[in-house]
Image (cartoon, rainbow over all chains, first blue to last red; front, side):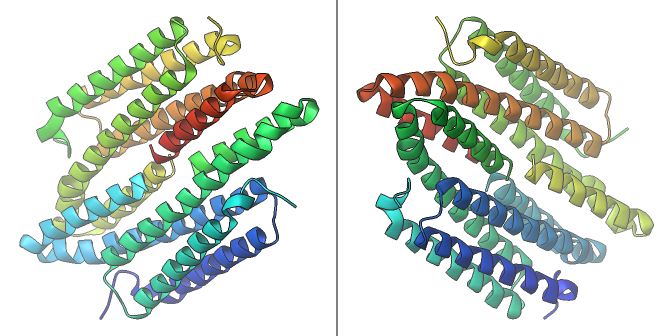
Length: 94
Length: 94
Length: 94
Length: 94
């Protein structure tokens, strides 16, 4: 089934694999007793990378799923918009 | 060498492994064309989990590394406090 | 001219006046040398209140301005969606 | 009584007055039916300004109140560190 991110699927997967690598790198840093501040710098980098993925997924979702539902009209359009609002809220508050 | 998180090392590692699992779960979701909003909900959960690790590492760092440097006195105390400030800034802005 | 928030204008203004009151309260707290941690608690409360206003404005904007542009179709729909994405990005990163 | 921010009191007050001006500017924008996205840009700017005040207050608090309590030693040091951790948590999550 097509999703908002279908055109960027490979890029999203590449970013997620890179983030997985960052998280494994963090485990190595902790294993090797790396200085707290350096571990924290890497945690902040991984958090930013995750936020970028979220913003990309959300952008694609608006440009495709929400766009198409609104263009078609009907009750589904409102559902999609409310759903997007709730997702933005979770993102802003996470 | 002892670090701020040394007493919680196993717990920090357990959290990081759980986050690694969340990131792999995200790759599976994207692979299976999961609905964008459900992917986004998982990204927000992983982001929150990473922030919790950061807050725990920072708390341990203040309670041990910063605490000990200040208790000993000297120039190192100021370095440690400025370093912690910068780490908090990166955290708040990530 | 009608805007996304036109139906909630009074409520938005009421929230902004309350936030203005919180900021004046902060000035009073600093003037009276209130304990740092108590000042910080109030700053966090005002920040949350501002974020809630942002989320309400954004929700109204999606439900009206973006919705209407997409329903009408044409190039304006894409402009509105890209604009909304950029606004969400500023919000998530602020 | 001296607080962490006592040396920067005038600067903190100046920043808070500027933020108060931004919030009043927002009320004017809403009153004049300014375009949603432009209102949102100003809300993001005010939120960033508030976060900067928080980071300055927290930095001063660590460098003075927490520093002095730890240097003196005793139970108050632990109280101050736990309090600072909780304030950082509220900040990161706001």
